[in-house]
Amino acid sequence: MHNTRLVEELKEIAGAANVLTADEDLLAYGFDGTWYESKPLAVVLPLTTAEVSALHKLATRERMAITPRAMGSGLSGGAVPLEGSLVLGVMRMNRILEISEADGVAVVQPGVVNADLQRAVEARGLFYPPDPASLKQSAIGGNVAENAGGARCLKYGVTGDYVMALEVVLPNGDVLRTGGRTLKNVTGYNLRALFTGSEGTLGTITEITLRLLPKPKFVRTATAAFDSIERAAQTVSAVMASGLLPTSIELLDRITMRCVEDNIAAGLPVDADALLLFAVDGNQEAIVAGELEAIASLAREHGATSTCVAASEAESEALWSARRAISPSLARVRPHKLGEDVAVPRSQIVAMIRAVREIAARYGLTMPIFGHAGDGNLHPNILCDRRDPEEMARVKLAAREIFEAAIALGGTLSGEHGIGLLKKQFLELDLGPEAIAIMHKLKDAIDPLGIMNPGKIFPNPGGPDAFRL
Ligand SMILES: Cc1cc2nc3c(=O)[nH]c(=O)nc-3n(C[C@H](O)[C@H](O)[C@H](O)COP(=O)(O)OP(=O)(O)OC[C@H]3O[C@@H](n4cnc5c(N)ncnc54)[C@H](O)[C@@H]3O)c2cc1C
Image (cartoon, rainbow, N blue to C red):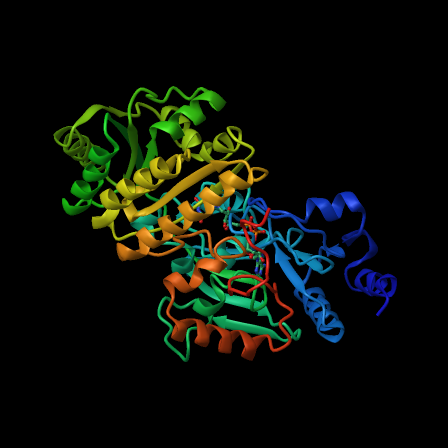
């Protein structure tokens, strides 16, 4: 079909103002938080499930690829469309449909920004724990499609642990509703788990029912600085072995602190080799304070050169703002950065950090390390310049070695960012051929024409390569 006619049909479905074809719009919807870029044929911004369904039917008829997109903050290339395809942006579907204290659930549309949901439920004394550092720039649809994590996942788990029900528009336009609002539900296969983390490759999520918890009354933050990152990692293991369960244990290494400090002057101890940021929450102030003091004392026993408990909410928020500023701060240092997302069992955190530092030194690369140390999810970032083929050859080898090290330690390629385009050529390192074969069969069963977000997750020889210059 001629493109002009197709665009007219898109406008009939979503309204002319909600179909974008100007070059500047196509550019804006052609990238995410990675270094990939592409140019779609059009961007369509539907408002209702019925419109999404009609768009899928049109794409099916035309055999046209669709890439669902929320806020485009993804760090694995998932929202980057195929050249000449259709971006289906869900940001106008941004209503919180219901918050129920009685059932402890929120029902939301996929374009609701994570931080907005947090604020809305907290105003009602409730709590939605998953808190990606991008909480102000990512939406629940993207969080569910990536099964996003965050700092509080150490205690509370990831997005998928809160997904109770989903409405999903299947590739052919059929609307599937799966799950419910009961805490227990084992009826049939767990389809909501299948769609959670499916990175837009199985359908477009149009409504989400999320489990909520009572909001903890007290949250306290503390830091511990170390002159050796290994001692910091040993402290993480000691805290986790002590029987305490902090809300968060975040790690920032020396290079990370320096980059954040150069960007936002947060007052971080840049002379230290590493900083741990702890949070503890609960309903009894004395217990929360006591647990935090026990953690600080474990840190001192393991060689912390200083420990500090945030004296006020404002001081605590300043520390978390510094933590959230890491990615943008690293992005200022070199033209590009390759953000990794490996996760290892927590007993292997020291070994993983050692391996990353050794790989960085051997390849002569600058690799800040930060991440959710308490759950073993580390983000070694490789700062580089994609225009330098010699450097990129080293980056590629180093990235592979980081993945191999994580897997050898019993870990995985991705703790929370997903596979997308960035890691698909490494998928086979992590999953055996049987798992990949089953994933192919599931994809073919649900999306036989392959129109949903093609080119993502599955290794395809000749497809986009993160290291092609
Ligand atoms: C500064 C920064 C910090 C970050 N920190 C974290 C962190 O702490 N933890 C973490 O997990 N991630 C983090 N991320 C990564 C990113 O924010 C998350 O992956 C987030 O969940 C993506 O949400 P989004 O709304 O931007 O989705 P997008 O980037 O728009 O999309 C992500 C994927 O979801 C799919 N998708 C989007 N909407 C739908 C839908 N309605 N139906 C089906 N598929 C859909 C897309 O096709 C794509 O594959 C960070 C990113 C940045 C830039």
